[in-house]
Image (cartoon, rainbow, N blue to C red; front, side):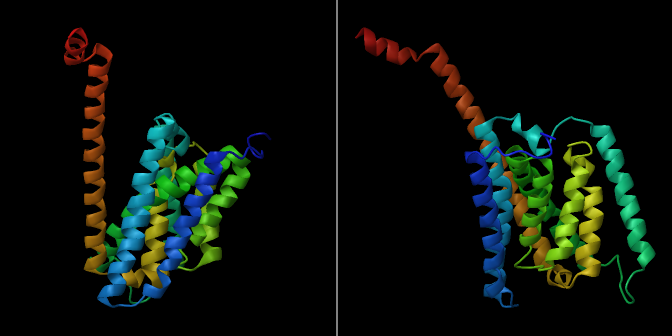
Length: 267
């Protein structure tokens, strides 16, 4: 019961709440820029792709991990815990979900394998990295530590739903989707149990086939935006690697002392 419900609000809890509200705020800011003009496209790209997906999902989470230590990655859901079981369940759940979707039938006139859908798929899967790191990882972990597993599942689902306010306002449907993924995560506590297959099938079908929001990303611009996000991620990782090496060298010099400083002291 202590794992299911508790009350241990800390400073990190408020950081998570503020970060989650910022995510929703960025999504809501997209509403006035939902048109087809070049200006609307650029602003939406900056708000969602640069600031939200890259800024919150990659930069913020990686800096949080740096501050708390790499051990926190396991709490977020990225660890060696039950990898094989997680992958097997991920594939089986994805197959079951796909069979359910196919059983309901494909809308008339829908062509699955076309380049427009591939453009959308590239963007959706890229956005999925943000959802795994920030929503199902960082937010869920923070809420679990503060309130327990059940409240964490509910709160994560609420934030997941409202995260779509500016581009896919299907709140009840997305809340239920959030409940499903959050609950399945706790089977193994490894993100591989839901990503990439189980989440991928649900997200791709939901957005590309079932939702009107999918039409907005079935274009080459979405593919380009996805590639830009990955370029930013690579640049950020290279920067962090270079900074880590520089810090390691500085620490070595610090541990062994600076010979020049020693000579200055003698003088």
